[in-house]
Amino acid sequence: MTPAVTPWSWLAAAAPVLVLLALVTTGRMKTRTAALLVAGLTLLLAWTVFGSGALTLGVALAKGLWLGTWILYVVFPAMLLYRIAERAGFDRIGSLFGHLFPNRSENLLVLAWLLPSFVQGVAGFGTPIAVAAPLLAASGWARHRAVAYPLIGYHWSVTFGSMGSSYYMAALTAHLTGHESTAFAHRASLLLGVNCLVAGALLLLLDGGLRGLRDGGPLLLVAGVPMAVTLYAVTAVVPAVGSVAAGAVGFAAAITLAVVTRRVRRRRVTATEETIPGHESRSRAVWLVSPYLYLLGIALLVLLVPASRHWVDRQAALAPGFPGTSTALGWRTPAISGYTPLRLFDHPGTYLLLACGLGYLTYRAVGLWQRRPVAEMARAWWSSVHSTAVSILALACVTTVLIEAGMVSTLARGAVAATGPAFPALSGLIGALGSFLTGSSTSSNALFSALQADVAGLLHAPASVLLAAQTAGANVGNSLAPVVVLIGVSAVGGGVETHRVLRVVAVAAVVLLAVVTGLTLVMFRWAT
Image (cartoon, rainbow, N blue to C red; front, side):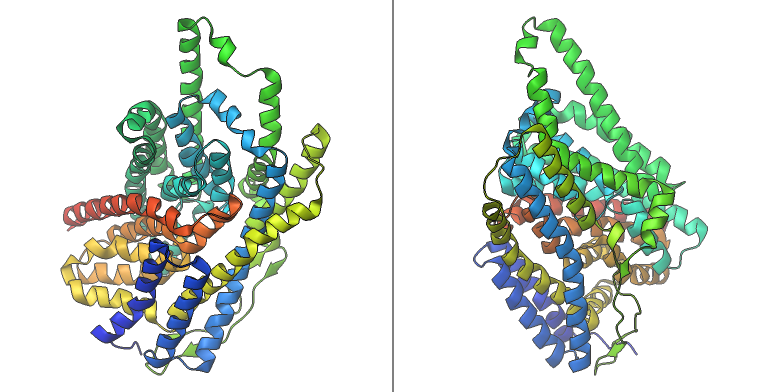
């Protein structure tokens, strides 16, 4: 039995989300304190309003702690990698990218748009931000913007990234046929291709205004249009490699533009050679960035080779089992034997740890390692991780309690009941809500894809239209998810106020969601 949705139950389900949004965006309270407060509020509402008993709440909290542990295995190594690179003089790395892309706007697009989008194609949760944010910070951007910009820039690649996990989750949950899955891929890639270009333009505008858009416009078009076209073409055939292929094409276009532009500049300016860093300084920059190159290389080697990916998927998986639960109002959650598996060799945290070790050895070998006491670095690392760990664990528990108590479902079903035929305008927003709460586009699709497909049937529309809006909206919400933001904060060494990051990202998210909504309404009208 599915419990009925009343105005009171819908408001109670929305309360933790609204309070969390208010607390983390105003900046009047530390993220850790806000997370603990919202966790307490969620438990209270789940118990008093939604009839969740001790077993339900206990299972929800256990799932949340496990989910938080999964995330912390990304955060702790990401912070350690940053501290190791910092000790070697990582703040001077900006010279490498400044040499290849001397235009600030082009540099921004490469680091915050192209690079994390390509990494998302293979590495998934946490890794794109862990790679891009430190590079942006080292290249001169304020640390809160160094976290915010890649969150905006890479969001479009999430659905068809990580070997298409979000796409396949939506298609399987909605029980799509082969033909319907292809239509879903077409419509989703169309929405995401448009948002790819919009995201790049927003980065230029947020960083440099109209002048930034003018300076970076050529690279935006030269790389963005081929990426969008490639995403659309490839996902119709092999959805799992859509983001990888699009990112690779974008990088190739950017390098080509850089080479052509540099040759033209050499012809026009006779003294150009004096402005180009020498071989020694370029080599030093490459050594400084080597831990992040190792991180990228390991992820690509493991995840792009079918044999190695098959092997890591079958090794050292830790996944606790949980019993089924039910609430007094009738919401039921089935038992699960393997919840959110932590596969040791298929986890970003393992790749980050390997990059830490290889980076340390490289710095020692080339003479970049500063021989200061290791305890000093350990103290700096611990000061940046302990408060973040509490925030992530608390937010993960908020997510699982909301799901286990039926509060997330209540929010979605209430939106359906309130809007009726106007529901397509909210499809993207519901997807965004799911990933904001869970920190995962895949989880959002798991929660709401069946709902979107059912509503499409009631409205006599193809399910692929609303599912495309669902997953595109989930991608946008992923860029706002507090747990994902905290991973970015950890990657730049901590000490960044979360609300400052969210204020930057929120501006872009509103525009991106508006684009998703507008295109969804056009597709819905065309399809019906």
